[in-house]
Image (cartoon, rainbow, N blue to C red):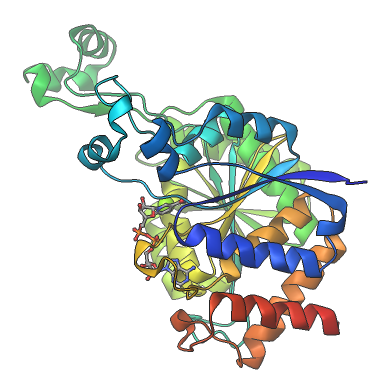
Length: 377
Ligand code: NAI
Ligand code: MG
């Protein structure tokens, strides 16, 4: 009998190769014996052929599943999206949307968790002693999509009537104004802060750094920092650090080893997590979890890398470590530990290295190397 239903969404391009590699590792560690994998359709192919990159049948599969492992999708600008759409769906007002962004909203996956850890022996490490985790708010802030161009008259009027600093924009023509909002809710702020502090506690991080800019963005960043100061009182073993986003970008280069857990809003988290990931090997190693209260989607953060399609060449470690995060989330700690240990040992030995690490091991070759470490352990 299977204990879990896992939705597997390989997606486009190299998404297929890296997800295959991760499933191979999950087979070897003994996870697949207790799992029913539900393979789902997602991505550009389904936009082209059905006018929908996230078909309803995939959403149904996700609803049946405990969580999902996602590879990568291709997305292209508006003109290409229209041009490649099957003629049957043209001129029907269909608009391409990012299926991964939609998944985050649909399942309220409010945490974007990105561990950035230096594995010893990785030639791409900036330093060997980095072990930090970024918690990025995933559903609100500057990426909520509440924005206007041109700005509707009623909106502009409301701004001018209600905010003294909006007056100076009143002289502009509405088509010469663009507004993107940065909306925080107390609920949104509290739940990401709480999740980050719980995680720091569970995984032994000593500090939680709230990364905002409350001296300038006084209301939204201010709300986040004030809530952090209140919540941290529930975690006596944790220390709260407050760092402005611009300074954080610098400190991450200067002394990333000093940081444990970083928690921040949507756009700041997007940027800072890419920077942090690059310090420990970049796209071949960067993985993330989109996590809600009852659902989660784990993925490498890279895209479909069209230039490497069909070459069995890219690094599967990001996806294998995303699968490890999935095991942790399912509370399969022992298997999670075995996978991570095997990855760490293979990197340390240095015999198997994909092209980004300066070697010529293939995607399947890297998966095989990790599987044989697991078999030996
Ligand atoms: P990309 O992440 O697909 O690739 C950029 C470059 O990074 C590749 O050409 C390759 O040199 C390197 N790279 C990526 N993954 C690697 C791996 N596992 N091992 C070694 N090297 C790796 O980003 P790009 O080229 O900007 O986008 C390609 C497509 O992917 C676009 O259609 C884009 O919209 C989509 N995309 C999808 C994402 C997702 O599904 N979450 C995220 C980012 C981009
Ligand atoms: Mg990003």
